[in-house]
Length: 185
Image 1 (spheres, rainbow, N blue to C red):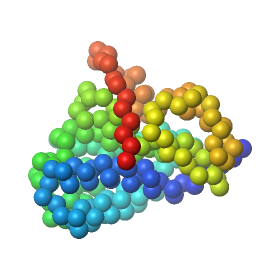
Image 2 (cartoon, rainbow, N blue to C red):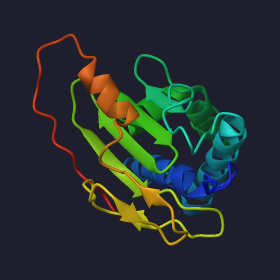
Image 3 (spheres, rainbow, N blue to C red):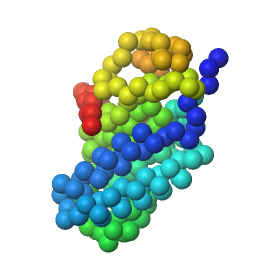
Image 4 (cartoon, helix red, strand yellow):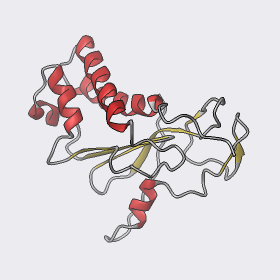
């Protein structure tokens, strides 16, 4: 059996999450390029350190709650720290970011939801690869049920229930239509 890509290679997922948050600051804020770069680099470094022992490519849902970035009535502490490093107060961050945001940073997938009942949208998605193979990022949210990766590892993408699907299946409120959207950068 092949070993999945090394635990430390969470860079694409973290970059996708940080890029998503940074776009809000660029669009809505009065943040210059240097501040934006400092915010992005600080947040990437903090997330990589935070996730170091909570990243399980062979079991992507394990640790998902720990890796969840949440903004609601409380600002996510790491986002708050990165904002303060560029001179933004927590109140200013609340004005620049969605007031209700959940961002899941999981191995092979980064997705978000704006609002408690909003749709879950995929920002980044890739397929597991064997060590020595290269991960291929995909922009489609639906993949064939079985495919061979460059490293020769057969993956079952559609057959596993993602962490976000588990959340939706466990809802106690009336069901709503959830549309999946994939965003590529």
